[in-house]
Structures are given as structure tokens and as C-alpha cells.
Image (cartoon, rainbow, N blue to C red; front, side, top):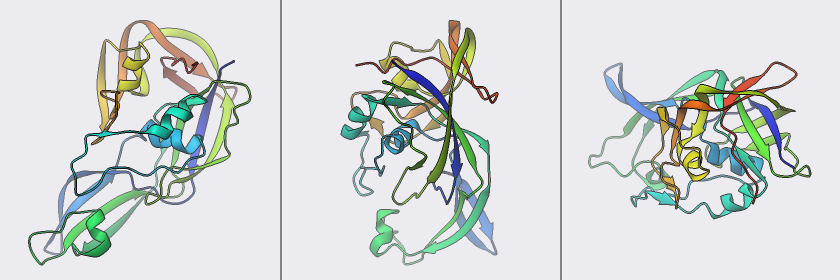
Length: 241
């Protein structure tokens, strides 16, 4: 029997899922600026809740548009995790002057000139809090008390979950959801607002790189609530196999 949980994720170290936003001038030097993503994609979260360590399989030297998340198929047999919304943010800033040599080439291709690559990196720091929904397949599935969602990204979270109940179904906008997963489970929205686009999709699941706020004209959005007053609005994905 499936159970639904609303989980609070409290960041214990640093998290660097980032997107480029432009450039800034610091004392005459032009820096590329990276900012944290507005929400957390659900695939690394599913790896974390499944007890696996997530790391991108894309090579920085080869253009990759699809990734075969083979281990993700096994996780989905036990649970499904929605993208995480941000409740509280604590940001830190780091200035980097990086040469295109050695291990750094795994981050950025070697530049054409001899000059270093200047970067301003904004990242989530301890004190940041996210919230997500987890649907388990069986009563025997245990929610971990800590998860880690990456190797280079760190991202160690303390997990506090409470079972949620469905208090109704409505139309309108949802909390963050994976567009490709909704379509795969027969829950394609009438329209949506894009929150996040990553570079690669899951093999066989178009638009799985796109996190959105979905809109439904019909009453397909479940209102979830816990005893502590936490609330979510998401269409319920059936995780049964």
C-alpha cells in the first residue's frame, strides 16, 4: 500500500547546483556569475532517498542530450520523489580564478587564451531548507534520516518526514513537478510555467529535464496536508509496478 510523505530537507553543508546568469565586474575583472537553481530536480533526490550517490554521467568534452539513469528504474520500484521547493535560503559567495588545466577541464573546457577563467559562484549554505513530497510503494519502505545528492556537489541533508493526507482535489497551479514524468504517468498538464531546464533528459522520457509549475483546468491536483500544517499541491503519481 502506498504512503505519501511531506519531507523537510535541512542542508548540513554546501550545495552547488547552479545555472549561469550573466557577468559581473569586480575591480576591473569580468566574472561569469553562477546562481543556485530555483528548485531541486527530482532525479538526484530520488537517488538520495534510494540510498544511492548521484553524479552526472555526462562528459564535459562530449555533447550529451540523454542519460540512461539505469539505477533510477530500481528506485522507482520503491518510491517516487517530487522536485523540492525552496523554503529558506542561505547563500554564500565564492570568487574563483581558474586556469583551464588538469582537473579543472572536467568543469570547463580549456580556454583559447592563456588567461584564467574568472567565476563568481553563489551556492546554498547550511541553514537552507527545502521541502518535497515522497510517495512510497509499500509500507516496508523506510525514509532515510539523511541523504546526500552528489559527489562534487556534496548536498548532505537532514530529512524530517511526516505522513500526509489528501484533503481534496482542485484545479489550478501545482508546486514544482517534472514535466516528463507527468506525461509518462498520464498526467500531462493543460499548460505550465517553466522553473528549471537542465541540459540532459532521461533516456526514453522526453522533457524529464524540465521542472514546471503545472496548470490543470480539471480537479487533478491533490491538496496534501500534514498534522504540522505543511501543505503541497501536486498531481499524484502512481508508483505501483
